[in-house]
Image (cartoon, rainbow, N blue to C red; front, side):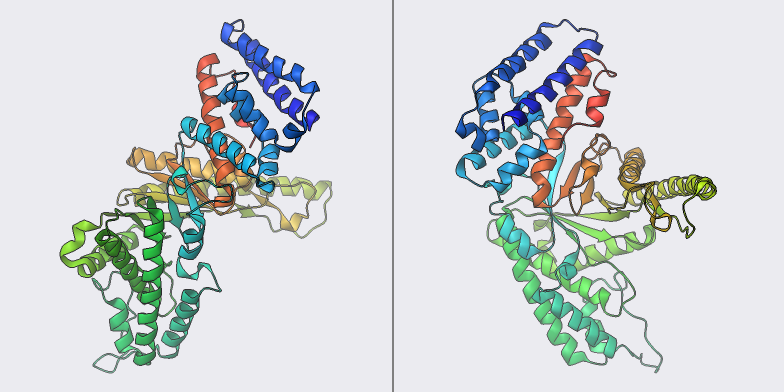
Length: 483
């Protein structure tokens, strides 16, 4: 433990020395004072008490509270190893130190952090108190981006699948003239899509029964969610549109349940902040049609109380920044040369795809109240891997694609909220690229929110150092700050 703590401060001291040697004011009194503070801590590390070994993060916070180091230095020194040990050791002292450190990080970070949750049941559980005892007010909102199908074992998901099966079984729908009637999709009617579908289906009784059950369960879950969030922003993505029979009806049920739950929350004195998101529309026209349909459902569901529920309509776009090589030959010099040529071509394809996605995002932004860029994980390039299983792009490509899309959106609507969503915290958050993309915020799982909050604060601190010592001095530190 002694070695670990000395290493933490030695790394911090090394960064300070690097800044001072390269900066225009290498002899500044502030920098000298910071060096002396860290050196004094290093000098006193020869005697580490048992309590310090058990709670190194608490000791670090204590040093800052005693004035031996600053809060900024404590945040920069709290690396992932110390954070990981604290999460494993869930004692009261550890929780208190972590809470203090996160409070400090919230003062410095400029990027909002929201929870990425699978479904309302999980959020109702985790939003009350996180694993380290932090209140839900510490974060900036919650997002449910995959709808009722996100948990295969949930009752709502089972009923939704049963509804689709019933709809598929009775999908031969005939019009008055005996010809097949078109399937109903969002945009085809203002509301009651599912009712019209049920009546026209081959199994009207079963579909109607399942519809009532689905709406009832979703409304109950959403109502509990609004109550738990207590006014914190909530983002709900509608079930993604595809060609399965009955999907449009499920979307209608989901939206009606959501709006009724929001209205009930208002009647109970709540002030819900609601953002409804359309997942991966095929084009701008489909998004505009979906937005008109959402407004129509809201008007018919809420009637004269429409103004009681202020909601925004956003769009979610999945970021695809990877292309895969299909090479089945063995690794040798000739194949390597061929591979390098193929990889160069693929990199050009990736760049072209990035430009295409950026243009699409800009088009959607013209009609959206918010944009969410959902990042997916891709394997990184490895020269020792099998050639048939190599890809280009990786995390760096994802970060670059998000940056390009954000820039395109900012060119159309400079102040439009733009979020990046990650289903897990990975190495993409290690570098400064994602934080420098001019994003409004990050959406990540609760298990990664601590690391994300600290990383955002460290990036902000390093940006301040860059402004103090010159743009060229802290560039390397900002690119590889610890997570």
